[in-house]
Image (tube, rainbow, N blue to C red; front, side, top):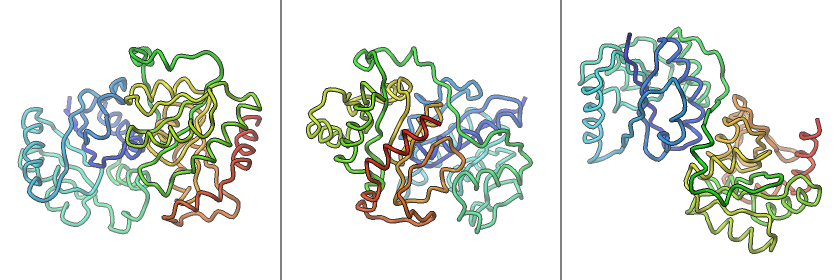
Length: 330
């Protein structure tokens, strides 16, 4: 049986989640489990450990400058040790292709954009214009030109919640629970704190929740604190001090999730939670291969980037509440 490795170099959690259908498709194509090499920042060893089609997950840096060749030889060491028959690279980065070539791997399959062609064995290339497609569409075309069948385009994630409960007793509360995703990697995608406060009040008063988990990273803990302090309500549960396992448990415990376009938004949808995305400043079309239900302002125009956080003010709390209520009752 062939031994397969898949490399994905993007650093965002959400980007990795978008690739889950394509990782699974390659595993199914070869009828064997695969190994995965990603950046440590994705925390894939925590998130993906329960996926049965993944054997091992390795972390590697993909740096530039003086670290470039150090990272190439770290990759080569993995390839030399594991002796893969196939290495798939899901983006246009040269580094893993060079490492695979130096390791003498016979089948190196990648998009083949620009200089990457020099290092890969496959002759099925994406066109440079294809790099204008979103990440999902790039990967779909990549699989198609390599005759790999794709059974499901939507990310899904299986996680054993029992292993998440240790050290997270404070997240186990009785009553109706929902989650707010209140931060984002890019500030211009973030709804304002006062709007989350107003939405929380509307949802609570209508009996749609008893508790609200506030999901954000420790570097954005001031956002959760501002929401709690300005609201003065007891129904918020601050998750900014939680590791990823705690965040996943909070999301899994929720009846639904409302949040900014971010990694946790994609994570929530992949976990099978009803998920509402607050979108005003970036293309909603990028979410079409997801179970995320986008909420956009009136007059919203797709495929336009607005890198000004004030654009999120077009989403009014009452309007967002009505959209959520309408969806929940349908």
